Length: 224
Image 1: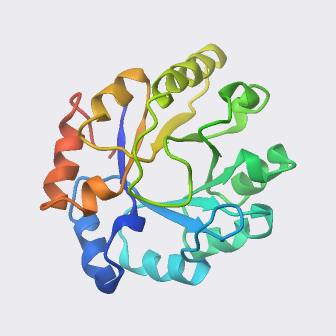
Image 2: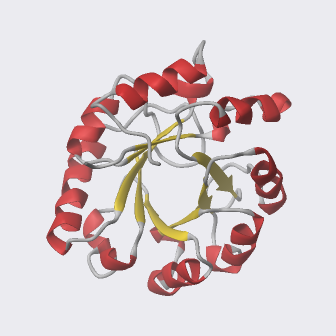
Image 3: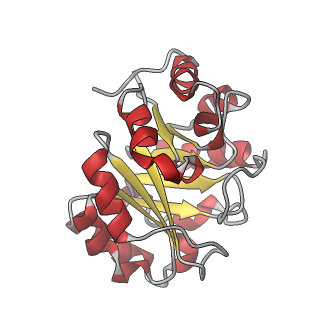
């Protein structure tokens, strides 16, 4: 049976009580913790870098899913791996030599992800899909949390799933942006494997319950 993952996005957490917010994830049914690294160049926002990821690694018991929304990510792959990243995703749009960067990530021992902006078609991954562990489909324009979900993402998931199935790869499909209980079932039915949930978790009255509800949709299983 397919395993599905819930990856709360720390971008939506209260950074004045970071340990408490991470403990919520530690004590929940979430599978990964999603970290958005933004440089103010690839996207119009700046979040945090390697030192904060390293600090989070010391607090978090879950695998760290690090999403690099930065230019020239090849310069920083090893440093984010050393900081504690278990999954490292780079943007296709930020890489002149994507094949090289994917294999650079894999050489560190991390899982290699490729992220696509909403306007970027999935067929651009046809020549590389066998080498990619995870494709992160942005369902909002990257740069800020709390945006509305772009529903064109759902047929895009189906196209990507068809490519993965045709090539018989184990590539996971991750959805990032505007994900919550209102669309989780549709995303999973379309073929998504990983749901990144920010505001819908950390903005909920009971974040643990929100994670539990998303795990329950479609009889989701916790990865052991």
